[in-house]
Length: 392
Image: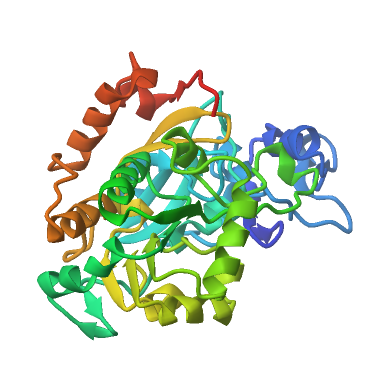
């Protein structure tokens, strides 16, 4: 009954109506041609071509395209009834393409991800890395209280221990999947609290195959355009990031502020020299969610933030399209959004940088304050996005 077509997809042939959408997708979009029609007449069946298997970077998309449920995901096959899940429309933070997706969650875990139609961004397609790796945006081991030197601490003690950020030379490492609102508050925090700082976004590019280039961006930096848009960074982001890590390794910074679990690229988190340099800084503050990450272990002060799927806010994709990511999973108790944590840190040195009380308030204030957002509303941005005519 169930025929595996490859590592990600299973075919239930008795459901198939021979529409050939899956075949045409592999022939015309990915141009990999793994699927075909065998036999003739009423004996015709969909199957993999001899010597092949369905294993291209977009193989899971054929499940979304199937109109009758004949194709299913091996990872999620029969794992839960869809009516038991909470479904939210959001944005994939895997790269700067900004694919529109619908995430189904149950008990705080991602149980299904499918592409959402947006003809200007990803049509109805989604890469396998984004689809099947979506649960990596919710760490298994979560931080739910502040830490000082690896030990539980109160918020007041953690904020007090972070005040050294306002003295000396500081490196601010920004995760590229932070929301636009978080970047906006970070910009004010750097200007009014940190002062003398180098600000960089974790950015490295990879070489894409011809098939991957159909939809995937060469970076893992979902919202780097947002950081550019707000003036936090500019120029060659990869070179600036690499040079900043070199200076960090040489001990050029008195303190380090780490915003987000991906403030160091994955390969750089494995480089012990960088995490050791963070440990050796006189003050290192991490606004993080993953209790087991190398960054959490390296920072002397760690404040419990929310990961991407527990937040709502705006993003700008590689093609300068403003989009809105909705919260897909209920936030864990004890955590705070990064912008509110930065507000607390600012209050610790007598500064007030955030007036908003909720994520929606912060989004609305940014939409009203930024002339380039004129005419855009949350509902429109969430539904189809809005193209920004700017020089970013």
